Length: 465
Image 1: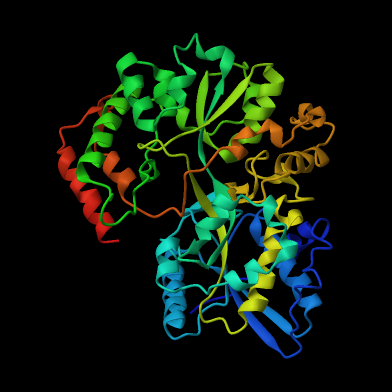
Image 2: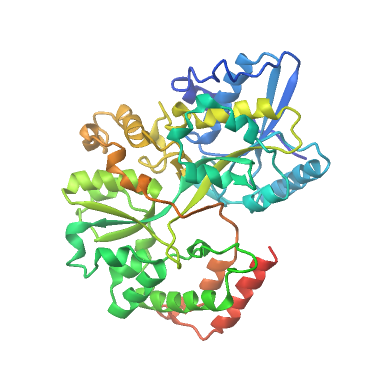
C-alpha cells in the first residue's frame, strides 16, 4: 500500500522566509479553473534539503491556481514498504495512471534526520537508469513548453547539463543539480609532491599508472575512484561499446593502485574547510572531489594564501564528464502536462536554484549546495551561494572567517570548462567487483583472481541491464 507521509510544519516554515515571490510570469501562467489534481512522487530528505522546498512550492502553486491540488507522496525507505510502493507505482504506470510529476535524486543513498540526524539509508531508485526510462516512454515530452518559455532565462543555465534530459529531439527530463568529478590542486605544493600540472590534465588511467610507477601516494589518493563512471562509453551499444579488455586493463591498474595505497582510507574522506581551520592546517598538494566541494576549497585557498587550480577528473578516454544528481520530469500519463511543466519550472528559477534564504549552516556539509549537486543555473551561482552562507553566520560560528570572503563566478572557472559528456548515473556491480582485486586483510596485496573473468562478468551485466 503506497503511503503518503506528511512533512512536519517546521519544514514548511523553513522556506517561508526565502521562496516568497516565486511565480510563473503572466505570459506562461496556465489557467486551471476546473478542478485538477497532480500526483507528485519524491524521496525523503533531511529538513534543510529538497523536501522543504517542494512543500513550499506546492503551497504557493496551489494558492496561485485555486483549482489545482498537488498530492505529494514521499517514497518509504524501509525495504519491504519501499518494495511494495515501487511495485504499486510501476503497476500504475503500466495502466496509464502513474504519477504526474517526479522530483528525484539519481543516487542510491539518502541522508535522513531519523532515527538520528545524518542517518544514511541505501535505496533502490524508482528509475535505476533514467536514460533508459526516457527511451521506454516513462516521461512526457515537454519540449514544446520548455522551448516557448522565454521568461526562463535559459542563457543562465548550463546547456550541456540541460541537454542530458533530451533524446531524439524531445525533452523528457529537467536536470536540476549536477556533479562533476574534479581534482583540486594547490599550485605551490605540487613541485614538492613530484606532481606536474600536465599529469593532472590527463585521464584517470594515466594518473593511476604514473602514481604506481613513481610510488607517489598523493597522486594515488586522488586516482582512487571505484566507479564505473570512469568509462565514457559505459552504456554505448554496438560500435564503440565498452569492451572486456578495456575493463580488464582498468582493473589491473586499479589493483596495483590499491596495493600501493594499502589499507589507508582517510583519503576517501570528504574535504572540509572546518577541519582545515580546526586542525594543524596542513594540506596535500592535490585532492579528488566533485564540483560540490568547490566552496570548501575556495575558502581554504583564501585562508591559506595558496593558489588553487581545478581540473576535471577525466575518464579513461580523456573526457570531462558530468552527471545529473537531481531531476524533475512529467509522467507520460499526465493529463495536464503543461500545468505540470509550469510547476516544475519553479525549480529552475534563481531563488530555488541558488537556495536563497536557506540556512546552509544547518546542513551536514555547510559549504555544499543542496542535494550534493551544483545548481544547473550556473551563471551567478557562486556569489549567490556564498551570500547564503554569510547571511547565516553567527558571531561565534566556526565559519566566521568566511564573513569577509568575496567570490564570484570568476573564482570557479571550472564552470566554463567544456563538458564532453553528461550522463545519468546507473547502478552497476563495478565497485563490488573491484573489491575482489585485493586482500584487504593482507595490507591490500593483489588477490589471486581472474581479472579477465571479472571484466567479462561486468560487461555481461551491462548488456543485460
